[in-house]
Image (cartoon, rainbow, N blue to C red; front, side, top):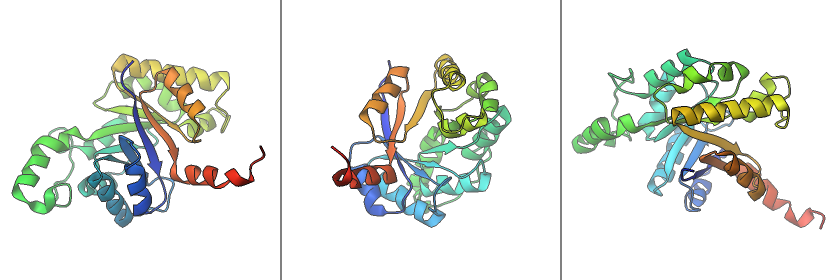
Amino acid sequence: MSKISYGTWLTIYSEAIAEILSRAGYDWITIDLEHTAINFSQAEKLIRVIDLCGVKPIVRVSSNNHAEIKRILDFGAKGLIIPMINNVEDVKKAIDACFYPPQGSRGMGLYRAQGYGDKDKKNKYINDEADKIELYLNIESKEAVENIDSIFDSDIAGYFLGPYDLSASIGSPGKFDTLEFIDLEKKILRAAEKNNIKKGIHVVEPSKKRLLEKESLGYDMIAFSVDFRMLDSIARIPFENE
């Protein structure tokens, strides 16, 4: 089994929380723009904090939107998670937005990622770093699973399962133990293994047991919990029954 890469999820705008999580030992931290109030200006600051701590900043954008993707990459994100990928056309759209020509059509700007225009830093980014952006897809619908072979036969780093949306798409929202959900999850894992891409999952509850369960299934990129669940679960300890 390949080495497991651990990260976590950031949803609260706090540079202090970003710094604390960055120093905890994670390989990467995902800033979530899809289901949070974090705006572009705040995302830029969080990317900077995580990056300067020596951890890989990944951003889940709010949608498969060319303009948003371009700005987030110019801020210095090293990886992106694109939500609601359902077919190969969605994948092509994401690749086109993420990469400079000839691979894509990302517009060239001069901002943090490009060293604010410094000649050497700009050239290093354009020539050596921009094509190493890690592109991950959220697989979170029955339609996506039906198209999984063509989706994964693309130039991507990997995927993250979206369990809540996937379960909702089969009429069982929030239920991950149905036979249909388990079969779909296994099908996705097999397709990822076949195409040699990273297999990602988000273990929302801060539970070592659940983490080990996902490790045993073969996931090699695991997001452990999320800032608000960590805070909430620890805050309640004095009031729990023995």
